[in-house]
Length: 56
Image (tube, rainbow, N blue to C red):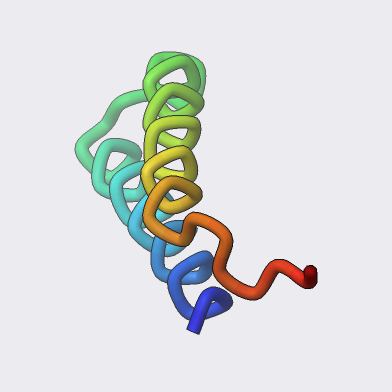
């Protein structure tokens, strides 16, 4: 379950970047936004997963 969420988050980020690149923006122009979105996306995912699958 957690793996699917990680891959889904990664794929959503890739898709967002591809759309911007296809629209003509340069990789340098979207790099800062891409990093912010990745941090936000994975932080939301980490919060949602909480302590899922943590060994005790």
